[in-house]
Length: 287
Image 1: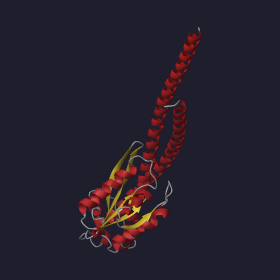
Image 2 (image 1 turned 60 degrees about the horizontal axis):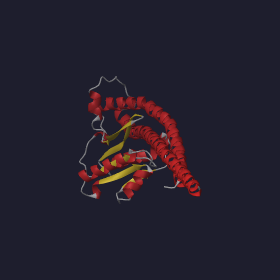
Image 3 (image 1 turned 30 degrees about the vertical axis):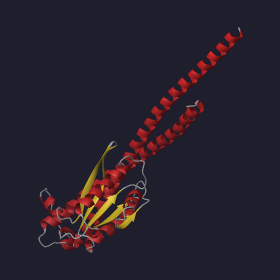
């Protein structure tokens, strides 16, 4: 390989390393905020679950369709991915698992439907001609509830109107900066909520207005909050995955530059040695 070609490769790799390093730093900053957002949302989720579960488990008269399992004719899948790649296996892990699950559980396209967050997931399912009832792309790195309220409300509404009889959610759960766990969560029906809360030492509440009216208002909010909480969690996992992927890319670029530099120095030394040998040979011939 010519010296100029090696030098060009070194320069190109250095420019790539600058980009990956910058992306790593941006993702690190975004991760810090996303992790805090996810943690701040947990107390709210715990409290609304406690209240709803307390009503559902403590009342004999308060019943709601969202709490009751029904024969499953169609299943909804709420899938959370990113708008772009360069995040390691963040997107592919979720998409492969959802695709495998659908193939195992269903024999017809009429038995399931998808609701998708993220351009990567949307393109993945559309390219396979799979039914996507609703989608949202272009979310901010730190999304607000207002941004996703419409799609969350639609997901809950599709269950309420009988479009599908159960709703599962798939996303990457943030564990740490270097670990995220693929998660499957059943969002609807909330049939297990009452039994789970009954096993806890719940506080005693007095309700005004009636328990039925409270459930009518709180249950859709709770289901929407499950989706929003998962999205905050997934965003933290996305930033962590991208930060790790960009750090690995930066490290690999550094190693590649070292290899190219060593090769460049060897080739350059060989060229100099060859020139010296030729000069010495020429002088000897003149003598």
